[in-house]
Length: 116
Length: 111
Image (cartoon, rainbow over all chains, first blue to last red):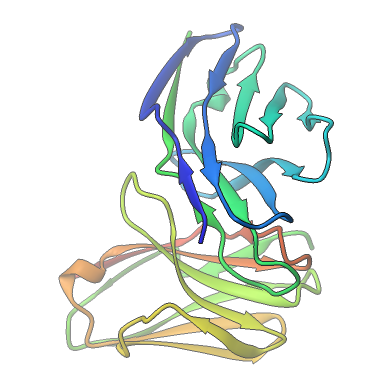
C-alpha cells in the first residue's frame, strides 16, 4: 500500500513570487509514478506535472518544476512567477500499480492562495 | 477530442429517486474510473473499468451501480441514496496505467 503526506494544509504567495509545496510518500514498490494535480474552485482536477521514479532528472513544465528526492521519498512542487490563476487546491499523488489499471493514492491536499 | 465530459453538472435527488451520471471520453483510453470527493478532501476511488470490464470495486454500497456500455462511455446508476452520499463525483480515464485524466465532475445533492 502507498501513503502520501502533504504537511501544509494551506499556503499563500504573492503574485510573481515563487512558492514550494511539500509532499512525502511511502511505497514498497520499486516502480512507481508521482503526480501533482491542481483543482481550482471550478473543481476539475488538472494534471500539472508527472515524474517517473526511475528518472533522476526532475520534471519541469513551464513555471512548474519538481524536486524529486527518491531516497528521502520527497516530491515537492515549485511554482515560479505565481499567477492569480494558480490559486487552487493541489494534490500530490502516487501510482504504483504496475501494468494494471488501478488506484491513485492522493495526499490530503494543500490550498494555495495567490495575493495580487 | 482530448477531454473527459460528464453530465449533468449538478444533480439534486431525493432518497427514493433513481438517477444516472454519465461520463464520456473519445481519446481511445482503455480504462475509466469513478471517484467520490467530499469538500476539501482528496478523491476516493469507487470503481475501475479496464477494457470495459469491472476490475476494481472499492467496497462501494450497492446503491451505486456502475455500467460500461462501451469503451467510450461510463455510467453510474444511483438508487436509494443517503444524504451523506452528497459529494462531487469525478470520472477519469487513462490510456497508460499510471496517468489519469479527470472530467469536470457532477455535483450531487441528496435531500
